[in-house]
Length: 428
Ligand code: S3P
Image (tube, rainbow, N blue to C red):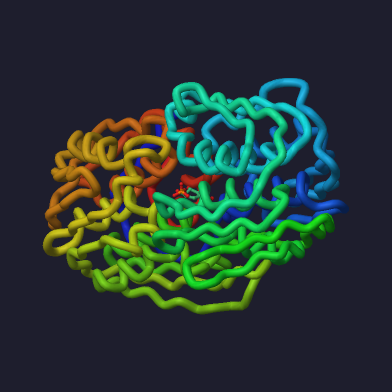
């Protein structure tokens, strides 16, 4: 168990990039390995706990991948039956998307994960995949997932929750179906799957809120891309710079796909001083730099579609809310309860240990601003975003905050503490 200690200190200054986008890194290794035929080159690939679990599973399906630091050379080929259970550890994106691909293969497979992953809901993918004809079953509607080969047909499906993982699992199975699949979303969930499949030559298009995929016998083309920085990782130094007085930092080469950047809009509504400098496109995704200065924030109300655009950023928004003037109210965010942890309950409990009051609601939370954060000992509960959010809290606490079990930050952000130290944070 690794304890991360954050101490309050001076302003954050300087510039940094952040590790590659986790969502895109999962997709690049799965799609390049299992869907494309030919050699893919992926630079800036995120080598973190979650994505390495996906990489190992793709290798377990017989795909050769040459690795040099953050560059992958993926020899895309027909996948082979795995000789053992594929273990996705903590990676929700890994297991759900891979399940979609494997439903279309002519061999059986079993997918599992850590105790934490095996508690997360899988009915959301099992149900639509079975409607397509897939032979997928779970244990009590959770992982382990067992997949038997079956012929797939297209479906016309309305997503009950705005989930990119569910949408992607269906789209990936749809590549192997005999006819068209249509998926209608209640709100626009992240569209990295659509962007990447289109770049690889898949017949995929949008009609309003509906994604339509028409399968084709032509194999997909390999990828040649650089993964931009993960906005969800940038969110931690971004919020830190907003709340530590006199901070002035620049975050470079960040993915600014608008299905992901809801936190930017919310922080600006709270009064944050953020300048977005677009620098171009990378693999069909808009990329740019973020210049952030510390200042005064005010409370904010967040609900509806905005929740989908910032679903991973609520733990760190909670820290910003404690430092704002006035009340912050979040609603329509019940999905937070089925992430790596129940992020509403876990954050409320850990912040209580630092003297902060968070009022839980079934689908969100209420935080009164202007709360002092005490030093103390907290736990990350094997949830990377909880670990890093509590570390940001420590930067504005009265004394040191010690986060137990903080190695899980490496599930998405290797050397998080090193990046924060580079900006002047007292974190080790
Ligand atoms: C992800 C989608 C989101 C997000 C997760 C990554 C993806 O989950 O929370 O961290 O890469 O598709 P849902 O689609 O289930 O909301």
